Length: 450
Image 1 (spheres, rainbow, N blue to C red):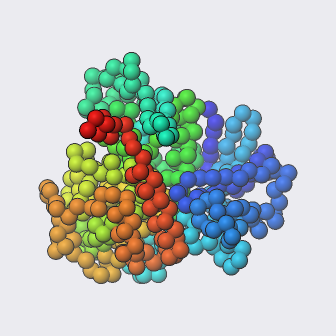
Image 2 (cartoon, rainbow, N blue to C red):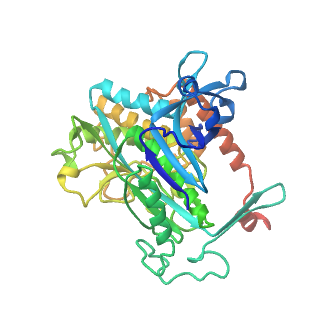
Image 3 (tube, rainbow, N blue to C red):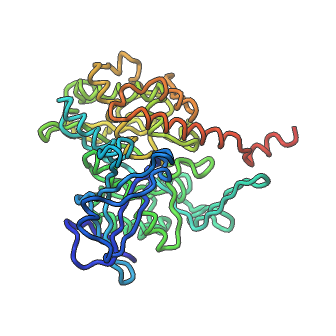
């Protein structure tokens, strides 16, 4: 097993410097330098790369420079090699400024925007990571074939019997929780990497798991979720297993969300605790209304649920919210106020998003939507978002429709350049058109003989 530790500075003794860059989808990419090539000039002036392959810039204006962030350094020891991993920011050579479309730039500017507003000086976020683990995975799409196949010895695939706990696998215990030790190994690696973990457990679905991180500020939350997804997959690979964060990898079974607990903070104190509904402050209710308002238009969902697969999770019956609602203790509400908390710990949980999101864009857009609600003093009750049961304010549950919403509702995204918004819409509409044009096996069952 490899080891991976967060460190304070770059040591003298190492073999490679691995520079981590985030692409437009939120996925880590990297370029690796042998120590013999590393110099102070490299750290000061950065490393050039072709941003057109990251989804951001046109080929005619694609040269960018990655600059190391010395607050995010990690040491990996693996098969006798010492590798320094370091997050990077990106600068545009033509302007000499931080590249405004880069995900970390967006998150940092959003945090600055919060402070500049005078409303708060920080936001704290706790992110829940849900995922599936498979023993075997295969898939293919061509002109003549379309299929996927997954197996897990917990009870998926031919020759694997469903366990006795099928249908109630939440917090499944030994001997049925066959990946308990794997999750322990993952959490150990995450904590060594400086990623705080609250707990881990088996989720409701077969082969479904959750690792819940602890509260962090916006940029740290986005960095650590990005790094955690990378490390979770690496540890699973050591066991010969496959991890997916897809919202809906299995038909008729629960999907994977990426729930975010959050509260605004000023001078070290939560601004969400109050004497209004559910022990929330008026400011927290305004913030809640802002998120739901911009979700209902589809605009926020364009960042929090940016895949066609997202809307196969957002269906009735699987605790996945499909309407703009908030309630205490309800897991079908888009925003839940956890019912198990004391008044002093009151916060909100946005349950709609999933991990196909670029987490930097998702968290930033969500915060800006909430701030917009505060600035406009939106009242979620008067706006019809308060729900103890069914709510008719249904989200536009289709990738094309949420992109249409983003086109029409984006003025609140103060730290998102129009060029990025337009690029995101173009990219995601192209994805949607491609997916919706491909026949799926179920359509053969339904329509082949008509």
